[in-house]
Length: 555
Image 1: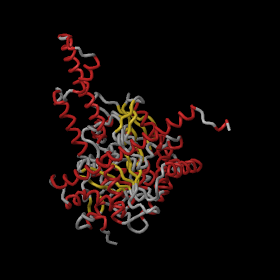
Image 2: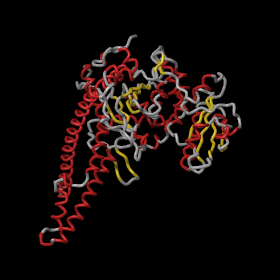
Image 3: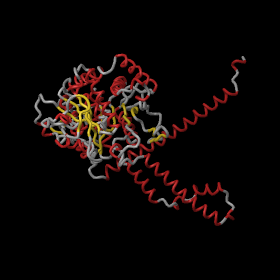
C-alpha cells in the first residue's frame, strides 16, 4: 500500500540514527578500553606506592585506622578551645553553639542535633555587608525553625538567634572572630538581628559559646558507645528517620517514592549495588579540592568491589559475579556559568549507572530534607550494602538513618578529629588512606587541560610570529598560508619553547595519578562493605589484610 511506502526523508532519518548508534557503540567501546587501562595502571601504581613509600606496610595501613580511637570507640571531640567548658558543663545548662553563615553544610547536622538535644541553642551569624553570607544565614534560620516546629517544638524561635558581625578592618572578619567568641571585646562587635537572645549580644559573659563541631559530639554522645550492640542501630536510626519524615508532607513522600522507582528502573540499578557518592564543584579552592572525587580512585574502587564480589563467590540472578555499583550526586562534570562544561572524566562509560544531580531534575527534591528522604529510600529499595564517598556533610544524615556510610579521608586531611568521634558509635565509618582522596592545591584535570591549551597557544603564537617573519623575509618559498599553518602543528614538539609549562603539566599529572588506593586499603574497604563494620575494628582483628575480606569480627 502507498501509505506504507517509506519516504526518502524517513530513510535518511533512519540512516542517520543508525550511523549515530554505531558511533556511540564505538565511543563506548573505546572508553571502556581506556578506563580498563586507567584502572589497571592505578592498581599497579598502588602496589608500587605500597612498596616504595615508607609507612605503607600492611601494619601501617591497619594502624592508621586507629586514629582518634580510645577504649575501642571514637573519642568525643570538643574543639580545643571548648574542652574545658564542655568538661564542666552542668547537665541542665544550655549548649550555645555558633554557626557562621558561610558554613552551609554544617547547618544540617546541627539541626538534627537540636532535635535530639533540647539544650542545644544555635547562634547563626553573618558578616555585615556580605549579602551572600546574610542570605545563607537567613535560610539557615528559617530551615532550623521549620524543622523544630515540624517536630513539635513549641516556640522554635527561642532555640535560635540571628546576629550580624561588624569588624574594624578587612582582616577583622567573621572567620577571624569565630576564634575568639568568648572574648568580651570580640562580642561587642556582634549585633542581634532576629530570634532569641545570644550570649554574643546579651552581655552574658559567663555563658560559653561553642564551636559548631560540638553538635557532632552531642550526636555521638546520644548514640552511645557501640552501634553494633543490642538494638542501638535500629532504634537510633528509626528515631532520626521519624524526625526527618515529620519535616516532609505525606503526599511529598509519596511523590518522592515514585521518583525513586523511576530512577531505579530507568538506570537499571541492580539490587545490592553499592552507591558511590561523587563530589564535585567548579572553581574549588585548595581546601575544597581535597574533598572532590578523583575519577581514577573511584573507578579503582568500582573495579575492586567487582573483584571482591567474585572472590567471595557471590552472584546475582543472572549468574554474574561481583558487587555492582552506581554513581550518585555531583558527577564528574561541571557546568561553568552555564557556558561550558568541565569534565574530569571524559572516558566515563555507561557500564556503571550514574543518576547524577538528582535534586536538579525534580521540584520535589529542592529541599535538603527531601534529598535525604530520596537517597534513604533509594538505598533501602535496592538493598545497598554501602554508600561510599569522601568525607562530606552531605553523607552524615544517611549514616544517622542507619546506612553503612563509608567515608574516605586521607591521612593529613583537615579536622579529622571531629568525625573520629563517630567511629563505632554511628555507622559513619572512616577509611584513612595514605594517598590524597581529592586533589593537591586544587590542581586537577581541568587545570591540567587549561595549561595544555596555554602551552599550545603560546607555542603556536611563537611559531606564527617566526613564520610570519620568515615569510616577510623570503617570499620565494612558494608555500601557501594553509601550508604555513599546517607546519605549526606538525613540526617536532621538542623544538617548542615550552619546557617550563610542560614541567607544570607533568607535575599535575603526577599529583592526579598519585590519588590511588593501596591494595591493603582496597581490601579493607571491601571488608567494610561486606561486614558493615568500622575499619578500625576490622583492622584490629585481622593479622594481615592480604585476605582481610575473609576475616570475621568476633561476636
